[in-house]
Length: 268
Image 1 (cartoon, helix red, strand yellow):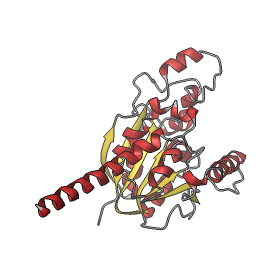
Image 2: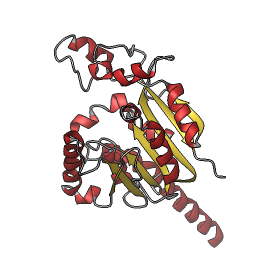
Image 3: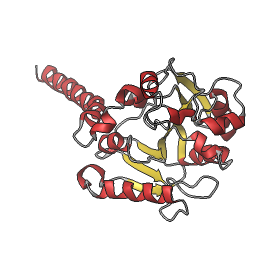
Image 4: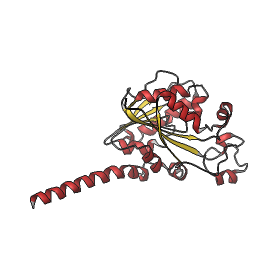
């Protein structure tokens, strides 16, 4: 009987442990640390489905690339703070770009204002095309980036960016990419002007850096988005660059159509 009780207790402990791990993501998504404006965008960004697809777990070392105002940081930081590590690879705090410098300043202030949630976050810098260390080489279980590839294309640094991600990951580590999706065959100039990138080009960049495409997902797809708007992707929410002009039309479309790709760094 003692053996039976012991086995039952062990089974219960394993079950409870699994539940805690499984609930960490959902708890973070439902947490009070999230700003209402960010929560309102869950319908377009699908954070639970996306992070599950990227196989992010609470005990991992994760690098978030260019977190901006911290939309995903609000989820990743509490999810990882007890068992994992989060590197927030943000803009250069001394950048010559006022946009980069101000964005980094606001992000630092956000983290400093809530030590309980963000006190364990390790802030690093990512300057594409330089030797900036986003995390110690070979230390990360996952690198995730959301709607950034088109930005690196402006400085012709997109290939260098993917090489940096490869170096930071452990063998077997995951690279998760979400990006605005251009129509197949869109020229490089068209991608640069519109903010939309072809899925084939993103896959090519990753493969050139040494990654293997493991799976693609339509989690963040939006069939209403034609990807041919007057002000590019910024015509749509949340930017709405045209202001009140055709605002209802673009609100009806919603946020952009996006690819969601999971790559793997080979183990050998």
